[in-house]
Image (cartoon, rainbow, N blue to C red; front, side):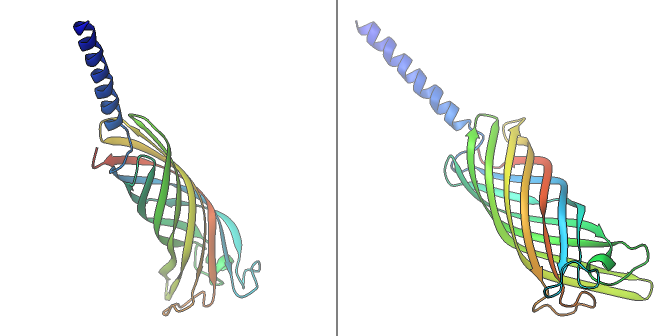
Length: 224
């Protein structure tokens, strides 16, 4: 009888230890601190406007543009399901400034760059030892800039505003702390030149960028 009791105790203790080990091995949990570095492409609807005018080239324009992005993201686990974090990123697009900002350059192409900073909230709806799937909501600031020179003509445009993102993030840990990352997001943003000085082109032009982005990269879990 005593041996039977001891056997059940050992079995029960083993199950508890196994479950504890599995809990500690989760890809995301409370106290996790994860760093993501990714690169990808974005398919954007890029539009500019002056006042109520939106479609004529001398007053703004709208078009579909493919761009590139490379954000850095950090995340902290508030619980086994909920996380909070931040992202810093840069997107860039090549566009015809005559179609959007009313000025011309040789070659008809300039580089538009955005700088983005967001605060992120995440819900991790599926977590295993190696897999971490999360829905992410982001809100923050965005600025758009065009700056360069074409022969003797120098141009500068900057606008600032806000951006909102919704996305799905997937991580797969190849090693204990190092994994691969995939992200799919949809976003919308709006920027204006109000209060900004030094612009030599696009005076009074607002810029709106919305679309979808696909990214791949690496993740590193600083804490277990």
